[in-house]
Each structure stands twice: as C-alpha cells, then as structure tokens.
Image (cartoon, rainbow, N blue to C red; front, side, top):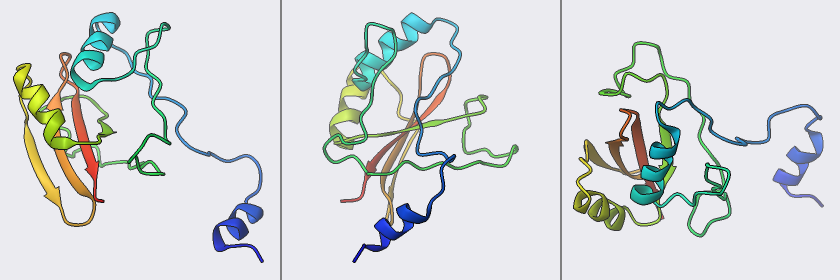
Length: 136
C-alpha cells in the first residue's frame, strides 16, 4: 500500500515545476555583492561566482515558499526592488549578533507563532533580505 505522498507522486504527469533551481538577478557590482553575501551571511561561494545552497542542509525546511505580492505592497520597503529573497538560517541570534558586529542594520525582527523567527536587512545594493529561522 502506498502512502498519500506516494499516491500523489504517482498521479502527477510529466512537465511541471519541481522546485527552484536558482535565484538569478542583476547587480551593479556582482563580485562585491557576492563577497558581501559570503562574508555577512556565510553563503558558500563557488569558483563560478555564485553559491550553492542545499535543501538537505541540517535544520532546513524540506520545502520552499513561493508567493506573488500585489504591485503596491510595502512589504519590500525600504527597498525599491521588485523581489525579496528569504534565506533560511540555523541560528537567528548568532547570525544577527554577527551582522550587528559588522555594522549591518537590522531593519526589523519578529517572532511568528506559526512559522518561526524573521529579521530583515538590506544588502549593499539596497535589496531587502528576509532571514527566517523556521519554528522547530
């Protein structure tokens, strides 16, 4: 007997999205911005210039959220960008302490009863970043 998830997988037809394969975006100074993400957020930079993040990292949720916001949302402010990337973190307190020590301004922090802990910062090019420590 198959489980519900196995039943669902068996009924899905070919030709559909299976997940996010990458996040690609323009930057004024890609090398400097990549270096900042490596230094400040610990992204494991690769020789090709980007980072490889694994879904199966310890304590990382097994799924990724995808959500379109209305064009007049203020959720991304003060950034004027059309997107915001949410990064899962393993220890919010440790990361925020590291960021503060390096002079990164924490825009806001919240504890969410359902989803976990959140904090927001800006990268050097003004892109708002959402940090998320999932509820355990």
